[in-house]
Length: 362
Image 1: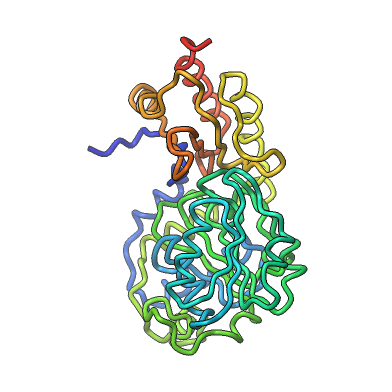
Image 2: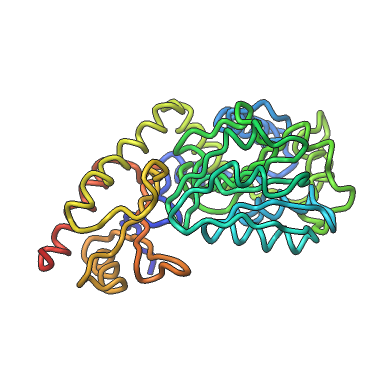
């Protein structure tokens, strides 16, 4: 049975915008239909606005965010290339795995989970890496890693940034920060169901494309001729039409609201959570000054069972929050407040539910 009344406040999908759900009802066009190509071009323009970039190769990969990660490595890394990766959570570790499978020699720059990585450590980890890669908003910890200094000091290296949980929720300034390659997901702050991975690639990075990547499906040499071609497009794969309708609509909602206003809405919801949760016994876990407004991590109070507590919220209130991963499983909750879910009424409902849940502890 599918429950449509859930309030998704975990680290996974956010509740979609109503306009997005309406978009799914549109008649399905062919993936080479001129009307669909026009919609794809407009979607890419909207992505450039949200990414804050002029990159020509900006489009959604026809798969979820992990495919965006893989695309970003296999198209630019050859066996033996030196890659520096920042690791302070699950997705930094996943970057290392993907880079290693592409044949890279990986230098890990590790930081304790819950703490941000000092950009200088990434810049000095190797004298001449092919790539420096880092997660902007680490979904497993609720920590924001700073990007600006990496772009300023990267030298000849390509700068790759995971923006899955940051795009649309906090400032992401691709051109200003000199990011070469970035990817995201639709299901977080863009308020669209999971299924696509927006990517953007600088002209500088395009000059370094691997001639024959290990993946056929994710080969940008071929995909770019379908995405950016003039007139007739080179066929590569059948695009997920309805998901692109949804992304087009979701981006439209963000742009119509105003990117700055969307960032401020997420920030105000996060600020309220950060102010009130400690009063209920949920201590803020991520490093102060690097806490994400769209994903708040808290320590579970003594006396409250991890699984039973989250199950109570789900069954009694229809509120879904996420548990901790890896070394903090059973110790930390991850509370998402993203996209259409980032509304103050949802924040207040959650706080009321948590007050009831923890009353016996106070």
